[in-house]
Length: 328
Image 1 (tube, one colour):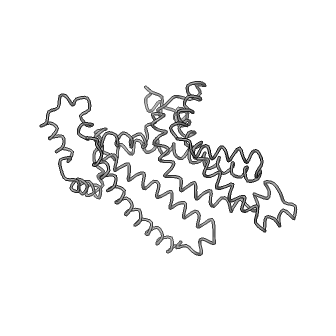
Image 2 (cartoon, one colour; image 1 turned 180 degrees about the vertical axis):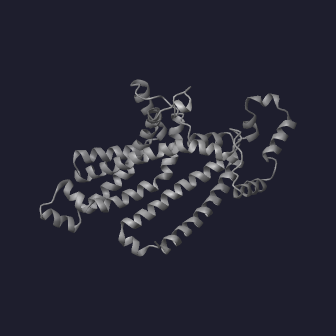
Image 3 (cartoon, helix red, strand yellow; image 1 turned 90 degrees about the vertical axis):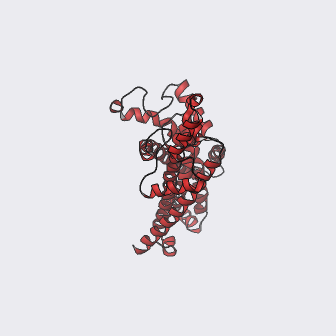
């Protein structure tokens, strides 16, 4: 228990350091970009806004202050629990994130589960049929997906299942024009399925290829050869001697894929007009909404970091050899 506590404290210190560095870098890049946040804030009314009004807007949002002063003011407010106010939505950043977080969480969990289970099964099938046509087909599928952009796959899925077949809605997270209390669980599932399917199709490749490689190594080991000599074969052999060994790297890769999954969710949400954190990130970046963008950076960094920590913890508890040598 003490080792676990020390491990979590050290990880927390690393996370805080990482958050400070990422926030500073994001703040610097946004301030160095050619995007004028005041111009983006004014929008179509730019012809009706004079220099004095622009100066007042800059003063109101603190955009007239030096770079470091703006960053330190934002950091001091953050330490007090205030993430600032979004320039786009005219709402506190915490409220904007809380409204959209559940949409993204449901989408990512659905895609994460589908890609993990699908990749694990495909990897087992490929390894059990090594060098056969089905193994070559699965490898071709995985290598092709590794070079497939998420937005292209999203457009393809959208055209086939929403436009041609008409099985699912084109976009959004709920039916348009429907009150929140009238939205059913089936409606939410229909609107989430295509974005989740897009992310899971693209995310299957890494898990499948690593599972295939590890299972091939297990099947070539001495104890498996001895088990084969005793008459064990097929899926029963994999179940008894290989499942635990191949589950460890599969779980690690799947938890470590949170960052890739979040990056893919940004593109998928744009394609399907899905109102999640990814779409808000794109809008904040394009319109220079510094408070919202930094708030999203914090949430996404914590999200990815926690996924990696869970991977380390689960990996350690699944493999006793690592537990003996680790800090847990």
